[in-house]
Image 1 (cartoon, one colour):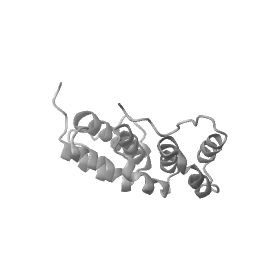
Image 2: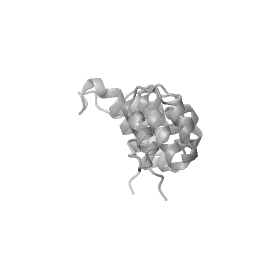
Image 3: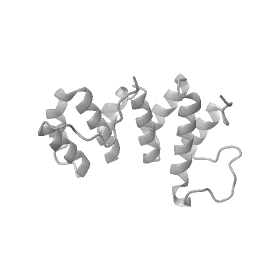
Length: 157
């Protein structure tokens, strides 16, 4: 296995600041400039997962960014990775309150899969939510059908 290109500390710094990684060219990135923050941070998250994913410091950084990061798409990627590693449960209550519909949906799907007895509470709480996927998942579950998992990925065994 090749040595990681960047240290965990460097990757965490870039995750939270969005600053370029050492050695990253100043030329135009291979993505639209409007997506610079999202793509750079998503790339950093992938490197953290691949190179350092088993370290407690890496898990902690992903959790902290998932809680309060400033790029919603990157926050969602952190939540997904934490879920696959069975490390997301402590965030679920906070995600139910999140302003981002995709993060709320993740928490709802997680609870319907892992704590289905909470359906009535979720149905009442999100009855007026404007997100169509949230409404869709709750309606399907209410009918007793298997729900589509738009966001939640089952943990690795």
